[in-house]
Image 1: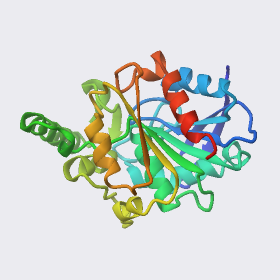
Image 2 (image 1 turned 180 degrees about the horizontal axis):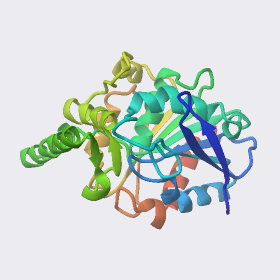
Image 3 (image 1 turned 180 degrees about the vertical axis):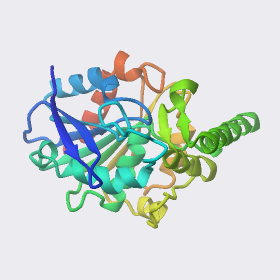
Image 4 (image 1 turned 120 degrees about the horizontal axis):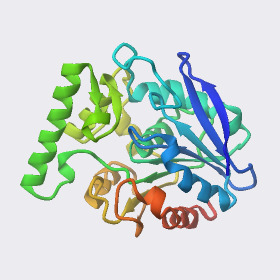
Amino acid sequence: MDPLVHPVSSADGVTLTVEERGTTGAAASIVFLPALGVPLAYYDKFLDAWAARGRHVVGVELRGMPRSPVADLRKASFGYAHLLREDLPAVFASDAVRRAGSFVLTGHSLGGQLALLSGATATTEGTKPAAVVTIGTGTSSKAAHATPLARVRRAAGVRFVGAVTGSLGYWPGHRLGFAGRQPRLMMADWGYEARHGRYRLHGDRTDYEAALAALELPALLVTIAGDAMITAPAVEHLARRLPAHVDRATVEATPDHFRWARRSPEPVIATVESWLAGKA
């Protein structure tokens, strides 16, 4: 199916792209946020399959990606706070989401982190999600790794990202195989959580860890079995920073952090739909 495409103007004038599939109904809509450096188009099969089940699905191309471009990532650097405080409120106020009334804020990897942080701090400007769902979302901290060698490798990798980003003024992930081309502040926010196992966002004084610990919304953390990038311990590390009512599920899909979305999205959708029954 061909989605409806909506341009959305963020608070600072950046034009974001939102794609809408299906029609609104009694069930809550899905608002989906992609992983770091992954274009929304990568999830076409996943979002099409979910809409085919009767859900109204709204996908968001994150700032800096091909359909929500930023001309110069060195001069127009942005971080998590820009996405949470400027972009997401604009998306939630757009016609595609406003007509839905009720929605489930859903994200993959970084998108799941943004969904949790937004849901915990009401960055929806009065429009509160009915629930939050994360897929393949967990800490990037070395604390999630079981062996000393794995922890050393993770710490070294985080330092490498910081050094390259500081030297070039942006992260050339499109050449180095991780996270796509990203601005300095984005990788600084990613790096802080990766080093310390908690969130502190540049330009934002919000205590996000306290907000996460007090999260009131129903939430589900989905682990992809066999995901080598965000492992079960990485998800568990994030879960420990959330209230006890947050649910967890492990899905047997294509055992890869990304490829499940194209090769086997149905088990993920079925798991989330089962959890949402009676909730949204």
